[in-house]
Image (cartoon, rainbow, N blue to C red; front, side):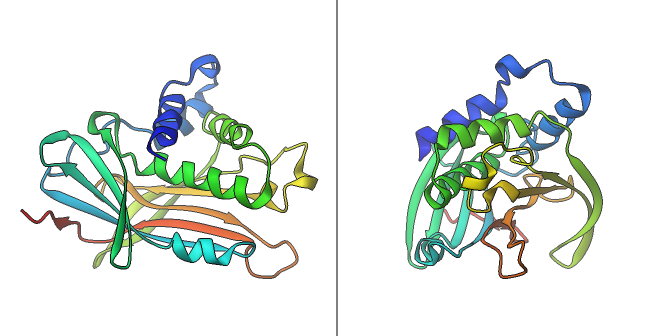
Length: 225
């Protein structure tokens, strides 16, 4: 998982051949991948994101993927932001990433959506990942919102992507062509990301086909010595 996320991060943070995207497309990318998102977070702090997953096709895997994602700075090298996933009394390391490039939780989130989609709907994860990357460089809807953080309401922006809106293979994607990804960011919350959500609706009105969310818990805790 660590190598895969690092690959997505490198691809996302270095647009490469698509660098000539228009201003709106660039703004989409810039809003989601700001390199300064961890600059003001104390190195003694720990950010905890509640992770919830629902998958009608594979409910057991979704239950195992529901838990918490912790971000803390490495004790021996505070320039590294370390992520780990906890589920009940168990935990697994996700990886360590340079804090100077920003909050890695967004790369983790995007990559888990790619993986879940590939496992559920089939198809190449490389193709899915490339379409997600392309969506980062296209215009996207942005809405000014107020979000609850702790005991307060803080201003935020919710940016929504539809990576497969014009997908030519939508008939074979088991509903995932309607995937909607919403990232809510705010300068008032540590690490910038208040919530990240991927949602595949059932167009016949039933329960969603797939939902994956990460939401920052408030307040951030202090790392135990």
